[in-house]
Image (cartoon, rainbow, N blue to C red; front, side, top):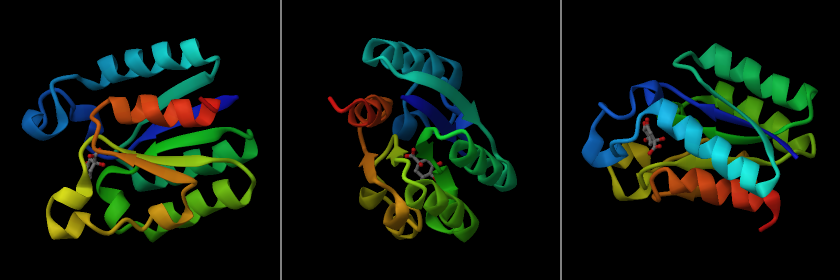
Length: 144
Ligand code: DQA
């Protein structure tokens, strides 16, 4: 199974960004962890991060065209990007899986984070386990 792991805006700032909420691991370390877990699970993985909504939309199109499953942390776009939702819907209606992940548990935070416009078109969601949210998503994709 080939998996595209996509991280949205501000996740490139992990490590220094609100460490009480998001932990001390930086994005490069997150990438290392994800690659290690994917290897153990026999998944081929590529990890990307962008602050740009259009770039994330294009990467979701690419996932559809290259037949790759997706682990998506849409970050703040979770809560309002219909463009990202429509792109995510093409993944799951195209017969591929898309797991929405969050480091924090948005349901336990500010009210504006309680809505996910992505959740309704995702295969499933993992939130609240820090970087282990990604590990759990990869396990789901590996069928373990
Ligand atoms: C996040 C949660 C979002 O509400 C927030 O905007 C983020 C990160 C998470 O991983 O916990 O940037 O997606």
